[in-house]
Amino acid sequence: AQTVTQSQPEMSVQEAETVTLSCTYDTSESDYYLFWYKQPPSRQMILVIRQEAYKQQNATENRFSVNFQKAAKSFSLKISDSQLGDAAMYFCAYVTTSGTYKYIFGTGTRLKVLA
Amino acid sequence: GAGVSQSPSNKVTEKGKDVELRCDPISGHTALYWYRQSLGQGLEFLIYFQGNSAPDKSGLPSDRFSAERTGGSVSTLTIQRTQQEDSAVYLCASSIQGATDTQYFGPGTRLTVL
Image (tube, rainbow over all chains, first blue to last red; front, side):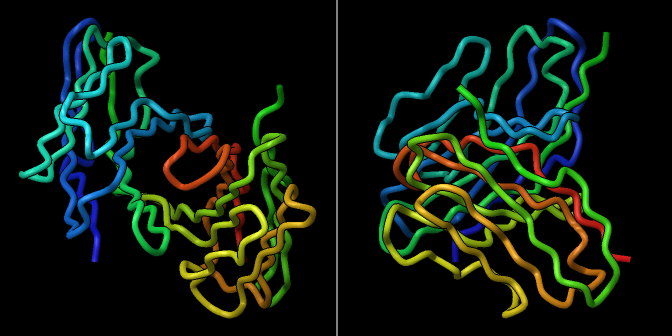
């Protein structure tokens, strides 16, 4: 069965510094997508970044980038130049594209940004 | 345009009562999802509607849970004979076509079962 693991329940970063949130997953599928979603205190979940497993190039979205290591089944999120507005819960998610729909979320990492 | 909306934003009910939670997806989005988020937990997939296909109900935790999507738009999640362990935030999301597209989430409904 597919699983998504976020081993850091909470992380802190100083404003303007860089932080990396880790995510590992387990799957026997070869085609899948990985996502990082952000959930601020307002509760509304929004997409941060999306990675297609068949693409070797790491996805980047402004200050957010991923380090996708397919063989190691690792999908970490790097936030550069951290801002106070980055404080939120961050969820790693996996969806398979083969067979039955399977969308699996990790348990999340709470990111605190210190002024 | 408007995002995904959910109502009510908060619902308090007594154990044993039935509740209905509503989700209005983004217009034109054919895929709709329901998730449950318990305190300190990640999102638990409940059900997935894709166009006119039969919904994927594989995540529903018991037969007390059911969902409908009328006219390919609005969806209602119904929980019958609520239990205290049903207390959670219920999130709805929609995407343009399918599961690999970006999901746009609603603000959720916080359900408290006393």
